[in-house]
Length: 324
Image 1 (spheres, one colour):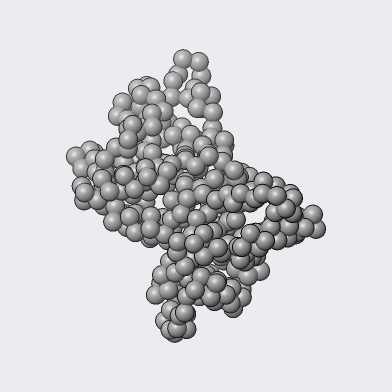
Image 2 (image 1 turned 60 degrees about the vertical axis):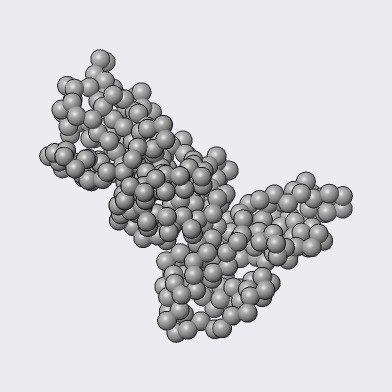
């Protein structure tokens, strides 16, 4: 019963998501069932340890545990074993106690790449590179303006090391990272980013080269017009002076917010930017999103043939997947 549990895959992802939005179960409280009984101690059964690990990871189970090629599988219905031989991350595993460790996100992304496709992986990568966190315990499902959990450089370094060692999942993780962009501030921004980055042959818009939520400084009349010192468009193609902003129904329907949005866009136009707006209505309407995509292509200077029948069918499937 003294064997340590090394948690990875979806259980580790659940842990890091919960930690980001401060919904993580208090480890000190969860660690004790009664005075003197410490979580992870040798006198706890494997089932008891697995149950407490699920509480800490804020997931229903089974618990995803990583084992080496020579390790025996756990004989426990609450544990799902994964054989995986990737390198430890940077400073090593995250230590909960002497009996429990959790893989950090760069390794978790490579682990998930052995079972997920690159679109799903890219969305997870953007979540961790971004400033929002998901949680089913929050009213709208996510919190915003958080610190990024990892950097693009950290992910790149780990994935390259994994590829050099031939680790399962590393090639797909590398492909997913090409679709990911840092600083997304909502799940819908992430979905749009993946759509913009994905190639046309796979149903995407293939309009790469943008940054997300990067500040544009305003001065003088533009500052007064916008009512703020800087604006941060959701998507910015700086070399083409083109911006795209996603206006959710949740925060942009009231008249005060609409007025503020219009002032910001007027300020952008006055300094030479060409703003476009995407709404929930557009993302939920394939015809409308295709029309906006064509408009964005023209502003970015692209001249393209119409989508082939196969590309159009793939786009329809992609849009349903990304936007429901």
